[in-house]
Structures are given as structure tokens and as C-alpha cells.
Image 1 (cartoon, rainbow, N blue to C red):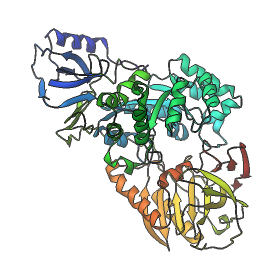
Image 2 (image 1 turned 90 degrees about the horizontal axis):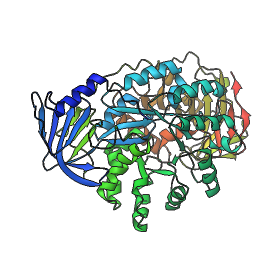
Image 3 (image 1 turned 30 degrees about the vertical axis):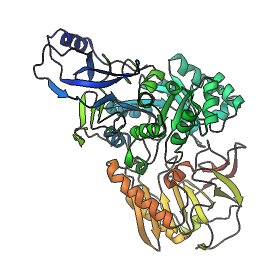
Image 4 (image 1 turned 90 degrees about the vertical axis):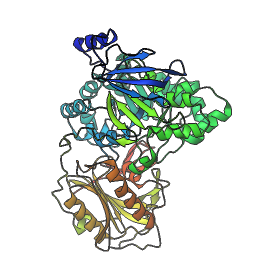
Length: 575
């Protein structure tokens, strides 16, 4: 359960407002607001003192000295939206993404910690998280139990001591997501111990169970998994609910399942909305041009979900599941003043947003009060090595074929042996290089594109460097451009940079506003599409090339890895 930070003197002041000995900062007068427990629209006045709602009801304060009274008659007032499954490093960073999301009413994150574990010692990560907690925004976190790939130092990063330090934090609400759940099935008692430890501390366990059979769902429930966000069909929803899972539905850049799933729920007449939540599941920046959780609510309304159920799915249901309705998801006395003011109940994009009692948006305008933050924790990626002609040896007999954006399978590589490949086919050279230059893995990738000549990215699951292309010369040029940028993504053609995204924070995330990042991402995706990339989200392709939670073959720091057999097929080569 989240820690309550109000001290005795804060609480005494808040109580004194009820008696008229002190005045609130703000009153939202004549509010038609959602009472999430009653499942009804209620009319009343909402008193706010600093970051807390101190009263909701028919009364007005006896003392209004210095109080802002904001009449919201004719408007609709709902709790701030909660994103229950955030990957806050999809090119953007936690600070920039929070500032962006707050403008559309999402004022609380429950976020992945994998990037922190990958790049920082716990002490450094925790210090940064404590600074994030000071913002007019609510941050909560997961504790991962695995790296989602094959690392030589996995046991060091995910040691028992490190994981337990994460689980001891009040702002860590869950263990997972369990992308390495097959290890549980194979008898990994360390992971089972962490699950039990998390549950003893009152935390949830989030699964990652796409396509899981009924028996697998039963086993994972016995292991302690509480929820899952991988439903792709109405049958998946039914199976998870039958086994007692909480179900989170996705509306993301690679799995936009939410609209058709909710339509199926409505068509079947299921009254199950109290047991559903919604997430955008780490979508890439341009997916959010038209919203975040408000986008999910809009899709729910269009699918025929009742407004009250739709708003509860985006707030109260999440807070109830994570045992934090004392702070979130409810417009009631004692909660954080996270409040969205809407033109009406069918318009989830807010006209005004309060987060922890701070106006972040009013009358449709960004108040520009979100404080800046020191992001120097993300040290610049300094690439102090070069790649040479001898690194471009592509004699691997096994290549990686893309089935879609993120699913890959092995294929037999024909001998090419040329510095430039033909654009008559969709095979390209693929190289993964250690970010410190110690090792490399060379193979072929089929299905990425037909006309991409040189492409380099330091954005990847592990932060190592991905090179793809038809031309060894342009691949080498792309690497040099990446080196000059101190990290990022760059597309090169015939010795010229076509487009790029600078990722100056650890070579992984953008140092700037999401609104600045979106056009850069769109330009990259457009350029790749023109050159034969036929899938929907190239950013996720880069992220998941190394991710062993997906079938069937991956390129990892240990080498080419067979996910189904849990073995290295071809090892990395030391440079």
C-alpha cells in the first residue's frame, strides 16, 4: 500500500478547515462529479487544501479567506486517470511523459523499473524516484524479476538483495510483469520466492501470458499471479476471469485490442466492468497524439460501455485493485486532489486538470507549471570505439525472419558475401554490438525492409547498438553518425543522413518534450515505410529484437538465442 505522507500538522490544518479556523486553497463549486462507489453522478462542492481533498458535500466553507472558488456548474468532474501499466522509456523519459500525459487527464503512473535496473545502481535509481515523487503527479512502480533478454550479468542485476530492496519500497506496488514465467514452470524457486515475498508485503503480481492455455493460467494463478494484460480475444478475457485474474485490456501501438474486446464484452451482455482496467502498455510517442487513458475511455464509450463504467475502469478499478482507494481513484474526502473537469461525460479529454491540487491545465490551456527536473542521472552514451571492415563478416547459417513487428523465426541464410545487397528481396545485414565495443553478433534479418541501406540504433532492450542495412558502407556511416550524436536512431542512404532521433540520455531516451519527439518519430517511421518497412511500429521492432519473452529466435548479448529450446544457437564473438 502506498505510504501516506501527510504529517500531524498537515492533518490538523486540514481538519481545522472543516471548523472554519482555516480556509481551503480551492473550492470547486456546483460540481456534478462521479462518485465511483455509488456509481452515480452527485452534485456538491469539493474543497481542496494543498494536495488533498478535505471535504466533498453540499456545504461551502465557513472561511473563504484567500480561497479560489471555481464554479464548475454545467461541467462533469471525474477522478484523475490512472495508467496501470506504463513503460516510461519508449523514447520519452518519465518526466517528459508525465508532463505530456497530465494534459489529457492521466495523473498517475504505475511504471516499469527495467531501465532503472539496467542502467543504475539501486541507490541512484531510488534517489531519482524520490525526486519524481515531488512533482505534481503520482508515480508508482513495479519490481521486475528478470531482464526480458539473455544477459551474462543477469544474476548480478537481478540479485536477491537488489529485488528485495525494490520490494521494500512503499511506492512499488507489484512484482512483474512476469515475462520469464516459463522459468517458474521449469522449477525456478528464486522467482517463486520473490513472488511470495511480494505477496507477503501486500503487493500484486502481474503476469505476461499471451496465448496461455487454461492449464497454464491455472498454474500461474497457483504460483501467485493476480492479473494479466495479454487478452487478445473475448475467450482470453473469459478464461482469465474464470480463474480469478484481474484483467487489463490494451490499446497500444502494437496491440490495439481494446475497442474490439470491449465491443465483444458489451455484445455478450457481460456485466464485468468492475473487474476490468485499461492501458496503453508503453505505446510509442506518436500513438499518443490523440490521448492516453482518455483515448481508452473514448474507445470504451464508442464500444457501448456506460460512461460510469468507463471512467471507473480508468481510475477507481485500478485504485481498488492496488489497495489505494484511500488516496486515488475517488472524489471523496481525504484523497489526493487529482481531478479532471470535462465538458460532459462523453468527452473524456479534460478542459481542466488538477493534479495533487495543482492546476496543470485550465480552460483548455497548459498552465506550464510542471517543474523541470535534473535528468543528469542518465549519463551520455560515449562510444569510444570504431567498427572496421573486419566486423562486417556475415557468414552465419541462421538468420532472423520477422513474422510481424515483434515475432521472429529462424530461417536458413543463403550466402551473399557482398558489400551491397540487392533491393529485390527483403534480406538485410543485422549486427548487434556491445555498447562498450567488447563483442558483436552478425547475422541476416529478413522482413525488415527492402531499401534500408544504413540504419543504427542505441535504443534497444539492453542499450547495445543495433545496425541494419543493405550496404555495409552505409551501416558503418550510420554507426559514425550515432557516435557523433552520443546515442540515438539514425537512417543513412548513399552517405547522407535521411532522418534521425537524438537520444542523448544514456543513448536510450529523448531529452525534451514529447510534443517535440512525436514529429521526429513520425519522420523516421515514414522514411522506413518508404524504404519497405511494412509493419506498424519500427520502434517496438528495435526494442524486442533482443526480448526472449517472445518467440521464436532473438539476437541477445549472449548470441543468437532459441527461445523455445532456451539455448544459445550461435554465440557472440569477442572483438
